[in-house]
Structures are given as structure tokens and as C-alpha cells.
Length: 301
Image 1: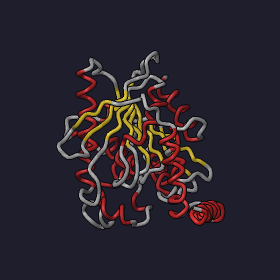
Image 2 (image 1 turned 180 degrees about the vertical axis):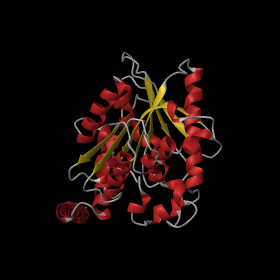
Image 3 (image 1 turned 30 degrees about the horizontal axis):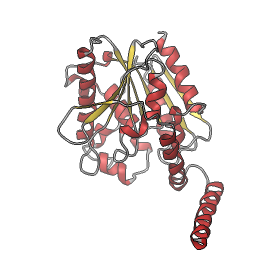
Image 4 (image 1 turned 90 degrees about the horizontal axis):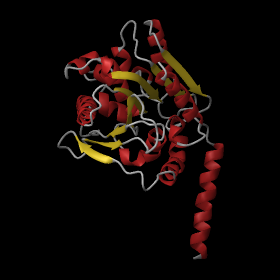
């Protein structure tokens, strides 16, 4: 027993020391912070805050969770769809209940979709799942007598990549008889928005293939921007991100400005890590203040 305690102490001390000495901006540092982030997600999840699950396909990952507005909160004019991250391959919507909680308390219907994953599926399948989830949300809104509600689309990391594709790739929307007008706004948090500025990591290669390949344009949101973009857009990124390079968001923002975007806001979390971009579900987190201030402006438009 004493030996086991000594081993645990050494592991904990080594873990703490690594967090102190490792620089931000590298994957190892992000990996070491992941257990803390997952613990906070679990700790902040209310057991009574349970969603309704809806399927939009036959694959086990083709489903979404619906959290209705909290009882007593004035219902918002728009609904919120949030795509979680984890490199197009890990995690699941159920883990992000704290994010839903803070939004339902504000009066939002919150939808959290899942999707098929790499390496068994690539960007074309993931794009289709993103679109299918949007169509399912609109179907559910019609069934509940809410057909006129617009969508605030948001995503963190790889979820932000998919959100940007569905928001700005008009061909993807047109194929389902939709237009960009179904959205009220889009928030892109710590996301791969210009894949040419991202190192060729295994997940990027699995989802999009090589930069010269035929799949790459379908996975790269920056290539789908058009002159005069009018969809209100928030771009949030930590300057110390060790998973998705900060320059992804800088490049995307600069391209939007170059094309004359009407309403794009870029916010930097100074020294913020990749997980900080996803921390808006925690009260007092800097990313929550940025997101909610932006939402207040969008709500009043």
C-alpha cells in the first residue's frame, strides 16, 4: 500500500512538473491538460439536465441531442447548434452537457450533433452528416411549431471546421434546397479554418488527404468564402494553441476582411491553449465572456 502511494505521488509530482516546465503551443502540453478539462466537464454536468436523442441516419454516430430551454427562461428567437471537437474522431455530444446548460439557461433550444468519424469516414461523409443534422433540426422545429427560428451555428476545433463548411459552402446547402439565410450567425472556436496553415497531422490527412488531392478543397473552409459575406461571424482562438495553429483563424479572418465581410469579429485569448477555446461552458472562463457578449449583440440585431 505504501509503495502504491509513493508511485502515485511520483506520478502526480511528475505530471505537475511537466505542466510547469513545458511551453504552451505544443501538443504534449495540450495532452497533459486534457484530463483536467474532462474532469471539469464531468463535474459541471447536472444529472437532471437530460436531452432527447434523435437519429438522422442508420449509422450509430448519426444522431443529435436536443436540450430544450430551461423552465422559466424567456425563449430566444434563434436556436443553437454546437459541434464539439476532438479531431474529427473522438468524443461525443453527451460529454458537453455543461455547454448546453449555460445556453438553455439563456433560453436557447440547444442541438448537439454527432457524426461519422475518421479513419472510417472522410470529409465527404462528415459534410453530409453535418447537413443531415441541420435538416433534422429544421424538421424538429417544424414539428414543435417553430419553423421560423433561425440557427446560430457554433463549433470548436474540428467541429468549427464542419460548422464553417456548412455555413459558407453554398453548394453544400443548395444540394439540400437550403441557403445561408437559415443561419443567424456562426461562431468558430479554435478551429482549422485554413488547412493550408495547419501542419499535416494524421487527423488532417485522414479527413482531407494531401493538400494537392481532390478531397482537400471540400475540407478547407477558407476556399468557400465569397465577396461580401454577410453572415455575422465570431472567430475565437487562443494564441498559445498547441493543436490547431493560431494562424488558421488569422488567415481566415484576413480573407474575410479582404473579401469585404460585413460583420466579422476576431477575438484572441492571449496565451490561451486549444482547450481554452472550448472552455466557454465553465462560469468565469474568458471564452464564455467573449461568446456571451457577442451573443448579446446578435440577439439584439
